[in-house]
Image 1 (cartoon, rainbow, N blue to C red):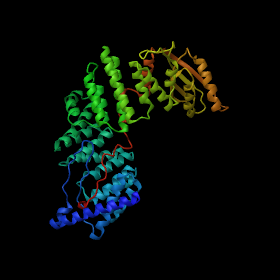
Image 2: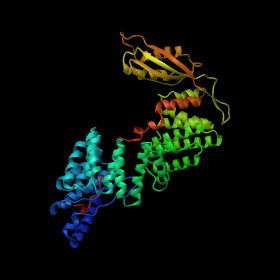
Image 3: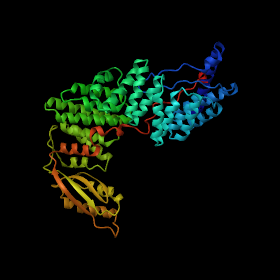
Image 4: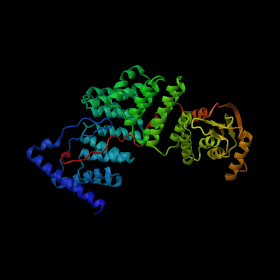
Length: 512
Protein backbone atom coordinates (compact mmCIF):
# COMPACT_ATOMS: atom_id res chain seq x y z
CA UNK A 1 0.00 0.00 0.00
CA UNK A 2 1.43 3.39 -0.95
CA UNK A 3 1.93 6.11 1.74
CA UNK A 4 -0.63 8.34 -0.04
CA UNK A 5 -3.29 5.57 -0.07
CA UNK A 6 -2.59 4.84 3.59
CA UNK A 7 -2.92 8.52 4.45
CA UNK A 8 -6.28 8.81 2.61
CA UNK A 9 -7.61 5.69 4.38
CA UNK A 10 -6.57 7.08 7.79
CA UNK A 11 -8.22 10.44 7.07
CA UNK A 12 -11.44 8.71 5.92
CA UNK A 13 -11.48 6.56 9.06
CA UNK A 14 -10.89 9.63 11.21
CA UNK A 15 -13.67 11.46 9.37
CA UNK A 16 -16.18 8.62 9.95
CA UNK A 17 -15.44 8.61 13.69
CA UNK A 18 -15.99 12.38 13.87
CA UNK A 19 -19.16 12.13 11.77
CA UNK A 20 -20.61 9.54 14.14
CA UNK A 21 -19.64 11.75 17.07
CA UNK A 22 -21.31 14.73 15.40
CA UNK A 23 -24.50 12.78 14.76
CA UNK A 24 -24.63 11.66 18.40
CA UNK A 25 -24.07 15.18 19.63
CA UNK A 26 -26.75 16.54 17.28
CA UNK A 27 -29.27 14.09 18.69
CA UNK A 28 -28.70 15.22 22.27
CA UNK A 29 -28.31 18.98 21.84
CA UNK A 30 -30.03 21.80 20.03
CA UNK A 31 -28.68 22.94 16.64
CA UNK A 32 -27.68 26.24 18.16
CA UNK A 33 -25.36 24.51 20.63
CA UNK A 34 -23.23 23.20 17.78
CA UNK A 35 -22.87 26.59 16.14
CA UNK A 36 -20.91 28.33 18.89
CA UNK A 37 -18.36 26.11 20.68
CA UNK A 38 -16.67 27.42 23.80
CA UNK A 39 -13.56 29.50 23.16
CA UNK A 40 -10.24 28.14 24.41
CA UNK A 41 -7.74 30.31 26.29
CA UNK A 42 -4.05 30.55 25.40
CA UNK A 43 -2.30 27.74 27.28
CA UNK A 44 1.17 27.19 25.83
CA UNK A 45 4.32 29.06 26.81
CA UNK A 46 5.27 29.73 23.20
CA UNK A 47 2.30 29.12 20.89
CA UNK A 48 -0.89 31.10 20.43
CA UNK A 49 -3.77 28.62 20.34
CA UNK A 50 -6.30 28.86 17.51
CA UNK A 51 -9.91 28.82 18.74
CA UNK A 52 -13.10 27.58 17.22
CA UNK A 53 -15.51 30.20 15.91
CA UNK A 54 -19.17 30.68 15.00
CA UNK A 55 -19.80 29.27 11.54
CA UNK A 56 -22.61 28.99 9.03
CA UNK A 57 -23.91 25.40 8.80
CA UNK A 58 -23.26 23.97 5.31
CA UNK A 59 -25.79 21.83 3.49
CA UNK A 60 -25.80 18.29 4.82
CA UNK A 61 -24.93 16.92 1.40
CA UNK A 62 -21.70 18.97 1.43
CA UNK A 63 -20.72 18.58 5.09
CA UNK A 64 -18.78 15.37 4.52
CA UNK A 65 -16.98 16.78 1.50
CA UNK A 66 -15.74 20.02 3.04
CA UNK A 67 -14.69 18.32 6.26
CA UNK A 68 -12.77 15.61 4.39
CA UNK A 69 -10.93 18.22 2.31
CA UNK A 70 -10.24 20.40 5.38
CA UNK A 71 -8.88 17.40 7.31
CA UNK A 72 -6.73 16.34 4.35
CA UNK A 73 -5.42 19.92 4.06
CA UNK A 74 -4.39 19.90 7.72
CA UNK A 75 -2.77 16.47 7.38
CA UNK A 76 -0.79 17.52 4.29
CA UNK A 77 0.34 20.69 6.07
CA UNK A 78 1.67 18.70 9.01
CA UNK A 79 3.60 16.55 6.53
CA UNK A 80 5.09 19.68 4.88
CA UNK A 81 3.28 18.90 1.62
CA UNK A 82 2.46 22.57 1.08
CA UNK A 83 1.06 22.35 -2.45
CA UNK A 84 -1.47 19.64 -1.56
CA UNK A 85 -2.33 21.33 1.74
CA UNK A 86 -3.24 24.58 0.00
CA UNK A 87 -5.07 22.82 -2.85
CA UNK A 88 -7.19 20.85 -0.39
CA UNK A 89 -7.74 23.97 1.72
CA UNK A 90 -9.04 25.90 -1.29
CA UNK A 91 -11.44 23.07 -2.10
CA UNK A 92 -12.71 23.08 1.50
CA UNK A 93 -13.29 26.84 1.22
CA UNK A 94 -15.20 26.35 -2.04
CA UNK A 95 -17.52 23.82 -0.41
CA UNK A 96 -17.88 25.79 2.83
CA UNK A 97 -17.46 29.44 1.80
CA UNK A 98 -18.95 30.76 5.05
CA UNK A 99 -16.78 28.68 7.39
CA UNK A 100 -14.39 31.11 9.09
CA UNK A 101 -12.17 28.37 10.52
CA UNK A 102 -11.52 26.90 7.06
CA UNK A 103 -10.77 30.38 5.71
CA UNK A 104 -8.33 31.14 8.54
CA UNK A 105 -6.54 27.82 8.08
CA UNK A 106 -6.06 28.53 4.39
CA UNK A 107 -4.96 32.09 5.14
CA UNK A 108 -2.26 30.85 7.52
CA UNK A 109 -0.98 28.43 4.89
CA UNK A 110 -0.89 31.10 2.19
CA UNK A 111 0.85 33.55 4.53
CA UNK A 112 3.49 30.95 5.39
CA UNK A 113 4.22 30.48 1.68
CA UNK A 114 4.51 34.26 1.11
CA UNK A 115 1.21 34.59 -0.76
CA UNK A 116 0.23 37.59 1.33
CA UNK A 117 -2.39 38.87 -1.13
CA UNK A 118 -4.22 35.54 -1.06
CA UNK A 119 -3.92 35.37 2.72
CA UNK A 120 -5.28 38.92 3.11
CA UNK A 121 -8.35 38.08 1.06
CA UNK A 122 -9.06 35.06 3.29
CA UNK A 123 -8.45 36.97 6.52
CA UNK A 124 -10.71 39.83 5.42
CA UNK A 125 -13.56 37.46 4.57
CA UNK A 126 -13.07 35.59 7.87
CA UNK A 127 -13.29 38.93 9.71
CA UNK A 128 -16.68 39.64 8.11
CA UNK A 129 -17.90 36.21 9.23
CA UNK A 130 -16.49 36.37 12.76
CA UNK A 131 -15.59 39.90 13.86
CA UNK A 132 -14.93 38.76 17.44
CA UNK A 133 -12.00 36.49 16.58
CA UNK A 134 -8.51 37.96 16.92
CA UNK A 135 -6.82 36.04 14.11
CA UNK A 136 -8.30 37.81 11.05
CA UNK A 137 -7.10 41.18 12.41
CA UNK A 138 -3.72 39.87 13.48
CA UNK A 139 -3.21 37.92 10.25
CA UNK A 140 -3.98 40.99 8.17
CA UNK A 141 -1.48 43.07 10.17
CA UNK A 142 1.23 40.47 9.71
CA UNK A 143 0.56 40.24 5.99
CA UNK A 144 1.01 44.00 5.64
CA UNK A 145 4.31 43.76 7.54
CA UNK A 146 5.49 41.01 5.23
CA UNK A 147 4.45 43.11 2.21
CA UNK A 148 6.62 45.97 3.50
CA UNK A 149 3.76 48.30 4.49
CA UNK A 150 4.31 48.46 8.23
CA UNK A 151 2.20 51.64 8.57
CA UNK A 152 -1.00 49.77 7.63
CA UNK A 153 -0.11 47.02 10.08
CA UNK A 154 0.38 49.52 12.90
CA UNK A 155 -3.09 50.96 12.29
CA UNK A 156 -4.61 47.50 12.73
CA UNK A 157 -2.51 46.74 15.82
CA UNK A 158 -3.45 50.08 17.41
CA UNK A 159 -7.09 49.26 16.78
CA UNK A 160 -6.59 45.89 18.49
CA UNK A 161 -4.99 47.68 21.44
CA UNK A 162 -7.93 50.10 21.76
CA UNK A 163 -10.54 47.33 21.95
CA UNK A 164 -11.89 46.60 25.43
CA UNK A 165 -12.92 43.36 27.09
CA UNK A 166 -11.10 41.07 24.66
CA UNK A 167 -9.40 37.80 25.59
CA UNK A 168 -5.79 36.98 26.37
CA UNK A 169 -4.92 35.75 22.86
CA UNK A 170 -6.24 38.97 21.33
CA UNK A 171 -3.86 41.22 23.26
CA UNK A 172 -0.92 38.86 23.69
CA UNK A 173 -0.58 37.85 20.04
CA UNK A 174 -0.82 41.49 18.92
CA UNK A 175 1.80 42.46 21.51
CA UNK A 176 4.17 39.76 20.28
CA UNK A 177 3.77 41.06 16.74
CA UNK A 178 4.63 44.59 17.90
CA UNK A 179 7.78 43.28 19.58
CA UNK A 180 8.92 41.71 16.32
CA UNK A 181 8.73 45.07 14.53
CA UNK A 182 10.22 47.10 17.43
CA UNK A 183 6.99 48.89 18.33
CA UNK A 184 7.83 48.55 22.01
CA UNK A 185 5.47 51.22 23.41
CA UNK A 186 2.46 49.72 21.64
CA UNK A 187 3.64 46.25 22.65
CA UNK A 188 3.77 47.33 26.29
CA UNK A 189 0.13 48.52 26.21
CA UNK A 190 -1.03 45.28 24.63
CA UNK A 191 0.97 43.01 26.94
CA UNK A 192 -0.31 44.84 30.03
CA UNK A 193 -3.86 44.32 28.74
CA UNK A 194 -3.07 40.64 28.23
CA UNK A 195 -1.73 40.40 31.78
CA UNK A 196 -4.90 41.98 33.15
CA UNK A 197 -7.10 39.28 31.57
CA UNK A 198 -4.75 36.30 32.01
CA UNK A 199 -6.45 33.36 33.69
CA UNK A 200 -3.74 30.70 33.97
CA UNK A 201 -0.22 30.71 35.47
CA UNK A 202 1.28 30.10 32.01
CA UNK A 203 -0.58 33.06 30.51
CA UNK A 204 0.62 35.32 33.31
CA UNK A 205 4.18 34.05 32.86
CA UNK A 206 4.11 34.68 29.11
CA UNK A 207 2.93 38.24 29.60
CA UNK A 208 5.47 38.84 32.38
CA UNK A 209 8.32 37.54 30.24
CA UNK A 210 7.32 39.91 27.43
CA UNK A 211 7.22 42.85 29.84
CA UNK A 212 10.69 41.86 31.04
CA UNK A 213 11.98 42.08 27.47
CA UNK A 214 10.28 45.43 26.90
CA UNK A 215 11.91 46.85 30.04
CA UNK A 216 15.33 45.55 29.00
CA UNK A 217 14.97 47.13 25.57
CA UNK A 218 13.88 50.40 27.16
CA UNK A 219 16.80 50.31 29.63
CA UNK A 220 14.37 50.22 32.57
CA UNK A 221 16.78 48.03 34.47
CA UNK A 222 15.43 48.55 37.99
CA UNK A 223 11.98 47.31 36.94
CA UNK A 224 13.55 44.44 35.00
CA UNK A 225 15.70 43.47 37.97
CA UNK A 226 12.57 42.89 40.07
CA UNK A 227 11.25 40.43 37.47
CA UNK A 228 14.53 38.59 36.78
CA UNK A 229 14.14 35.74 39.27
CA UNK A 230 10.51 34.98 38.39
CA UNK A 231 11.18 35.08 34.66
CA UNK A 232 13.89 32.42 34.74
CA UNK A 233 12.63 30.32 37.67
CA UNK A 234 8.91 29.74 37.08
CA UNK A 235 8.17 29.59 33.33
CA UNK A 236 11.47 30.34 31.56
CA UNK A 237 11.14 32.14 28.20
CA UNK A 238 12.01 30.68 24.81
CA UNK A 239 12.83 34.09 23.34
CA UNK A 240 16.58 34.20 22.63
CA UNK A 241 16.75 37.97 22.92
CA UNK A 242 15.69 37.85 26.58
CA UNK A 243 18.64 35.65 27.54
CA UNK A 244 21.22 37.78 25.73
CA UNK A 245 19.92 41.10 27.04
CA UNK A 246 19.65 39.76 30.59
CA UNK A 247 23.20 38.39 30.47
CA UNK A 248 24.60 41.65 29.10
CA UNK A 249 22.91 43.73 31.79
CA UNK A 250 22.86 41.65 34.97
CA UNK A 251 25.92 39.37 34.91
CA UNK A 252 28.94 40.70 36.81
CA UNK A 253 32.44 39.29 37.02
CA UNK A 254 31.96 37.94 40.57
CA UNK A 255 28.67 36.19 39.82
CA UNK A 256 29.65 33.06 37.92
CA UNK A 257 26.86 31.07 39.60
CA UNK A 258 24.20 33.28 38.04
CA UNK A 259 25.94 32.97 34.67
CA UNK A 260 25.88 29.20 34.95
CA UNK A 261 22.18 29.20 35.85
CA UNK A 262 21.33 31.50 32.95
CA UNK A 263 23.22 29.37 30.44
CA UNK A 264 21.64 26.17 31.79
CA UNK A 265 18.19 27.74 31.44
CA UNK A 266 18.98 28.85 27.88
CA UNK A 267 20.15 25.34 26.90
CA UNK A 268 16.88 23.87 28.20
CA UNK A 269 14.61 26.37 26.45
CA UNK A 270 16.31 27.50 23.23
CA UNK A 271 16.17 24.60 20.80
CA UNK A 272 16.07 25.90 17.21
CA UNK A 273 18.84 26.47 14.70
CA UNK A 274 18.11 30.19 14.82
CA UNK A 275 18.76 30.14 18.59
CA UNK A 276 22.39 29.20 17.90
CA UNK A 277 23.06 32.92 17.39
CA UNK A 278 22.06 33.59 20.98
CA UNK A 279 24.60 31.07 22.27
CA UNK A 280 27.28 32.74 20.16
CA UNK A 281 26.43 36.07 21.77
CA UNK A 282 26.28 34.56 25.27
CA UNK A 283 29.74 33.12 24.69
CA UNK A 284 31.05 36.56 23.75
CA UNK A 285 29.53 38.07 26.91
CA UNK A 286 31.13 35.36 29.04
CA UNK A 287 34.49 35.96 27.36
CA UNK A 288 34.28 39.67 28.10
CA UNK A 289 33.58 38.84 31.75
CA UNK A 290 36.57 36.50 31.76
CA UNK A 291 38.84 39.28 30.50
CA UNK A 292 37.53 41.61 33.23
CA UNK A 293 37.94 39.09 36.07
CA UNK A 294 41.00 39.67 38.23
CA UNK A 295 40.90 36.30 40.03
CA UNK A 296 42.24 33.41 37.98
CA UNK A 297 39.57 30.96 39.14
CA UNK A 298 36.77 33.30 38.05
CA UNK A 299 38.45 33.91 34.72
CA UNK A 300 38.63 30.15 34.17
CA UNK A 301 34.97 29.67 35.13
CA UNK A 302 33.81 32.34 32.68
CA UNK A 303 35.97 30.84 29.94
CA UNK A 304 34.45 27.41 30.62
CA UNK A 305 30.94 28.89 30.36
CA UNK A 306 31.89 30.61 27.10
CA UNK A 307 33.12 27.30 25.71
CA UNK A 308 29.87 25.60 26.76
CA UNK A 309 27.83 28.35 25.08
CA UNK A 310 29.77 28.02 21.82
CA UNK A 311 29.44 24.24 21.96
CA UNK A 312 25.67 24.54 22.30
CA UNK A 313 25.62 26.87 19.30
CA UNK A 314 27.61 24.29 17.34
CA UNK A 315 25.20 21.53 18.39
CA UNK A 316 22.25 23.55 17.06
CA UNK A 317 24.00 24.72 13.88
CA UNK A 318 27.04 22.52 13.14
CA UNK A 319 27.86 24.08 9.76
CA UNK A 320 28.60 27.65 10.83
CA UNK A 321 32.38 28.29 10.90
CA UNK A 322 32.16 31.32 13.21
CA UNK A 323 31.05 29.17 16.15
CA UNK A 324 34.04 26.84 15.82
CA UNK A 325 36.38 29.83 15.48
CA UNK A 326 34.95 31.40 18.63
CA UNK A 327 35.38 28.16 20.57
CA UNK A 328 38.95 27.84 19.28
CA UNK A 329 39.65 31.23 20.87
CA UNK A 330 38.45 29.92 24.25
CA UNK A 331 40.40 26.68 23.87
CA UNK A 332 43.53 28.69 23.12
CA UNK A 333 43.10 30.69 26.33
CA UNK A 334 42.46 27.52 28.30
CA UNK A 335 45.61 25.93 26.88
CA UNK A 336 43.78 23.05 25.20
CA UNK A 337 46.04 22.67 22.20
CA UNK A 338 44.68 19.59 20.45
CA UNK A 339 41.04 20.74 20.71
CA UNK A 340 41.96 24.20 19.43
CA UNK A 341 43.77 22.73 16.42
CA UNK A 342 40.76 20.51 15.64
CA UNK A 343 38.39 23.48 15.61
CA UNK A 344 40.72 25.60 13.49
CA UNK A 345 41.07 22.79 10.96
CA UNK A 346 37.29 22.48 10.86
CA UNK A 347 36.95 26.20 10.10
CA UNK A 348 39.68 26.04 7.47
CA UNK A 349 37.90 23.16 5.73
CA UNK A 350 34.51 24.88 5.94
CA UNK A 351 35.52 28.35 4.84
CA UNK A 352 38.31 28.83 2.34
CA UNK A 353 37.68 32.59 2.43
CA UNK A 354 38.73 32.91 6.09
CA UNK A 355 42.48 33.38 6.37
CA UNK A 356 42.67 33.45 10.18
CA UNK A 357 42.63 29.65 10.83
CA UNK A 358 45.43 28.98 8.35
CA UNK A 359 47.45 31.90 9.72
CA UNK A 360 47.30 30.50 13.25
CA UNK A 361 47.93 26.90 12.23
CA UNK A 362 50.95 27.96 10.19
CA UNK A 363 52.50 30.11 12.90
CA UNK A 364 51.99 28.61 16.34
CA UNK A 365 54.67 26.59 18.14
CA UNK A 366 53.92 23.19 19.59
CA UNK A 367 56.40 22.66 22.41
CA UNK A 368 54.92 19.25 23.32
CA UNK A 369 53.06 20.79 26.24
CA UNK A 370 49.25 20.90 26.19
CA UNK A 371 49.34 24.21 28.05
CA UNK A 372 51.88 25.99 25.87
CA UNK A 373 50.45 27.76 22.86
CA UNK A 374 52.25 30.69 21.33
CA UNK A 375 53.12 32.06 17.95
CA UNK A 376 56.51 31.88 16.38
CA UNK A 377 58.47 35.10 16.95
CA UNK A 378 56.09 36.92 14.63
CA UNK A 379 55.15 40.56 14.79
CA UNK A 380 51.46 41.13 14.03
CA UNK A 381 50.09 44.53 13.07
CA UNK A 382 46.70 46.01 12.30
CA UNK A 383 46.81 48.40 9.36
CA UNK A 384 44.22 50.80 7.99
CA UNK A 385 44.45 50.86 4.23
CA UNK A 386 42.92 52.45 1.16
CA UNK A 387 42.34 50.77 -2.20
CA UNK A 388 41.90 53.00 -5.22
CA UNK A 389 41.76 52.30 -8.96
CA UNK A 390 39.58 49.20 -9.28
CA UNK A 391 37.82 49.45 -12.64
CA UNK A 392 34.58 48.18 -11.09
CA UNK A 393 33.29 48.18 -7.52
CA UNK A 394 32.27 44.57 -7.95
CA UNK A 395 35.95 43.59 -8.21
CA UNK A 396 36.58 44.44 -4.54
CA UNK A 397 35.56 41.05 -3.16
CA UNK A 398 37.79 39.33 -5.71
CA UNK A 399 40.74 41.53 -4.76
CA UNK A 400 40.24 40.92 -1.01
CA UNK A 401 39.87 37.18 -1.62
CA UNK A 402 43.15 37.15 -3.50
CA UNK A 403 44.89 38.94 -0.62
CA UNK A 404 43.45 36.53 1.98
CA UNK A 405 45.09 33.59 0.20
CA UNK A 406 48.60 34.96 0.73
CA UNK A 407 50.68 33.59 3.60
CA UNK A 408 51.05 36.13 6.39
CA UNK A 409 47.55 37.60 6.19
CA UNK A 410 45.27 36.95 9.16
CA UNK A 411 42.26 39.09 8.19
CA UNK A 412 41.35 41.72 5.61
CA UNK A 413 38.16 43.69 4.97
CA UNK A 414 37.14 46.87 3.14
CA UNK A 415 34.04 48.76 2.06
CA UNK A 416 32.95 51.90 0.25
CA UNK A 417 32.80 52.98 -3.39
CA UNK A 418 35.62 53.79 -5.83
CA UNK A 419 38.06 54.55 -2.99
CA UNK A 420 37.73 51.67 -0.55
CA UNK A 421 38.78 51.95 3.08
CA UNK A 422 39.54 48.83 5.03
CA UNK A 423 41.62 47.01 7.57
CA UNK A 424 44.35 44.44 7.29
CA UNK A 425 45.88 42.22 9.97
CA UNK A 426 49.12 40.71 8.77
CA UNK A 427 52.60 39.64 9.85
CA UNK A 428 55.32 41.92 8.36
CA UNK A 429 57.99 39.47 9.51
CA UNK A 430 56.48 36.93 7.08
CA UNK A 431 55.74 39.29 4.19
CA UNK A 432 56.21 43.04 3.86
CA UNK A 433 53.31 45.25 2.87
CA UNK A 434 54.96 46.08 -0.46
CA UNK A 435 55.47 42.40 -1.25
CA UNK A 436 51.91 41.64 -0.19
CA UNK A 437 50.44 44.29 -2.50
CA UNK A 438 52.64 43.26 -5.44
CA UNK A 439 51.77 39.58 -5.10
CA UNK A 440 48.07 40.31 -4.63
CA UNK A 441 47.88 42.44 -7.75
CA UNK A 442 49.84 39.93 -9.83
CA UNK A 443 47.52 37.10 -8.82
CA UNK A 444 44.43 39.30 -9.11
CA UNK A 445 45.13 40.42 -12.66
CA UNK A 446 45.89 36.88 -13.79
CA UNK A 447 42.29 35.97 -13.02
CA UNK A 448 40.74 39.33 -13.92
CA UNK A 449 42.63 41.47 -16.46
CA UNK A 450 42.08 45.20 -15.93
CA UNK A 451 40.38 47.37 -18.47
CA UNK A 452 42.78 49.33 -20.66
CA UNK A 453 41.28 52.60 -19.51
CA UNK A 454 41.54 51.75 -15.81
CA UNK A 455 43.98 53.65 -13.63
CA UNK A 456 46.72 51.56 -12.00
CA UNK A 457 45.74 50.21 -8.60
CA UNK A 458 46.95 52.25 -5.64
CA UNK A 459 46.94 50.50 -2.26
CA UNK A 460 48.27 52.46 0.72
CA UNK A 461 48.71 51.97 4.45
CA UNK A 462 47.19 54.94 6.25
CA UNK A 463 48.34 53.90 9.75
CA UNK A 464 49.51 50.85 11.66
CA UNK A 465 49.44 49.63 15.23
CA UNK A 466 50.80 46.43 16.76
CA UNK A 467 48.56 43.71 18.18
CA UNK A 468 49.95 42.34 21.42
CA UNK A 469 48.94 38.70 21.12
CA UNK A 470 46.99 36.09 19.26
CA UNK A 471 44.19 36.60 21.79
CA UNK A 472 44.06 40.25 20.72
CA UNK A 473 43.80 39.13 17.10
CA UNK A 474 40.85 36.86 17.91
CA UNK A 475 39.07 39.58 19.89
CA UNK A 476 39.59 42.24 17.26
CA UNK A 477 38.45 40.02 14.40
CA UNK A 478 35.33 39.06 16.36
CA UNK A 479 34.39 42.67 17.10
CA UNK A 480 35.08 43.73 13.50
CA UNK A 481 32.89 40.99 12.07
CA UNK A 482 29.97 41.09 14.47
CA UNK A 483 29.98 44.52 16.08
CA UNK A 484 29.11 45.18 19.73
CA UNK A 485 27.23 42.38 21.46
CA UNK A 486 24.00 44.37 21.80
CA UNK A 487 23.80 45.22 18.12
CA UNK A 488 22.25 41.77 17.80
CA UNK A 489 18.53 42.41 17.78
CA UNK A 490 17.94 41.97 14.05
CA UNK A 491 20.33 39.04 13.80
CA UNK A 492 18.30 37.04 16.31
CA UNK A 493 15.07 37.42 14.34
CA UNK A 494 14.35 34.70 11.81
CA UNK A 495 12.41 36.92 9.41
CA UNK A 496 11.18 34.02 7.31
CA UNK A 497 9.68 32.19 10.29
CA UNK A 498 8.92 35.06 12.67
CA UNK A 499 5.14 34.75 12.21
CA UNK A 500 4.79 30.97 12.44
CA UNK A 501 3.68 30.91 16.09
CA UNK A 502 0.07 30.36 15.00
CA UNK A 503 -0.57 27.19 13.04
CA UNK A 504 -3.65 25.84 11.21
CA UNK A 505 -6.18 24.09 13.42
CA UNK A 506 -7.40 20.53 13.01
CA UNK A 507 -11.04 20.83 11.86
CA UNK A 508 -13.72 18.65 13.44
CA UNK A 509 -17.42 18.11 12.96
CA UNK A 510 -17.95 20.73 15.68
CA UNK A 511 -16.22 23.35 13.52
CA UNK A 512 -19.34 24.04 11.49
